[in-house]
Length: 252
Length: 316
Image: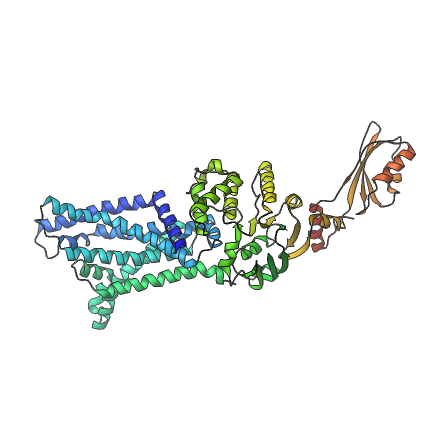
């Protein structure tokens, strides 16, 4: 466990020493602000069903920031070490592969959680300025951040995997971005054609559609199925990453 | 300390290491010598637990490098070729990180970090960012890292690669001073280096062991001949007379000026003809101003071994 902490500390430090953490933070804060403003405009223009929370997480701006975050956070993790050759020093120290994969993934996860925190401030600020006149549903807020975290963790695991495949950070970023977008489109595409599909298939489609998950959770509807779905995919991709990292040891 | 038996490593159809067997005793400094691509690095990577052999086995201090990889890694201090380091870290910070990874804690960690920094002469740059260090410093930081957990066995891949002559001497002295506590296996393609540092040399070429002996024995057992340089003053060319001496194979006249003639005599190995040259000169009344023997270097052995492999014989 100590080895894990040592590695985690080093990974977190690497994030904050390089400009990456600050760039991502700035990007997410700006786009988060724009999304929030967009949501306010919607509510201002006409009476609406959704709450401020729902509309914030449905703005295009939100999705824009969402897809850029994962490649930026994960591309460095393994690719850089491969390029520098430090993977060799790392794995000739008494560390296990799962400790390395775990520490790198956890560091990315911590940073991911940190970058979304400031966006909570928007809601708090609105509440403070209007003196509590605008209703901010707490349940919806909880649901939104929960699904945001679950989806993020899954995308980060995909990013880790992408980074373990190559020694080029740009390639890692492109692979990670592509996988995230493809997964998202899978859901959207299915929802669009969904009307012409049989009932059972529509249900299956809902199961993988991130847009659908967001829609439910931002209304405060916490469903365990998407959570389990993202958790299992996360585990799958972390296992794959572990296999790639360990491949060297089994390649005879 | 090291026991290697029939070790083989194949990469996608290419055999990098071919049924290698050797042993290294505790306290020895052994040099791995061979041209680039001979399989030195591969063998060292296997010994340090980085990757498994295709077949055969390797043990470090009684532990199998594959089955008890973690145990082996605790006992081995490995410095890879080119000394890879985290460029964004500071020297002291990096060594702290590595020491912690290798299981050092608390006061021992701080003490030992200071100790290896002193030993490798990087104390002065401990606050500098590694990316900005010169090659020599980077190399020494990597060496400090290899030493930090007091490993029984040090495996150094090209430890003097890219250093200037003063730095090379520094590393050599450091290695000699470390021999009390560590067994050392180092690789190099510079022959001079093993001659100066190692108790034993393992020559490896195309994945196979070519020779394994002390540097002295290797040069001695060599078929290669040694050279004797003579510079003398005589009225006429005396090459014929010198060639008649027992043990001389060939005489080469290298230069003459103002009555002084320089000859290089190729003599059979393990013969010393300096005295007979002097006796001859006294008898003939030649004046001598130079007479010295040039022993074959490991380089000669190496060239010879490599050439023998391809069928050519460089020395007559």
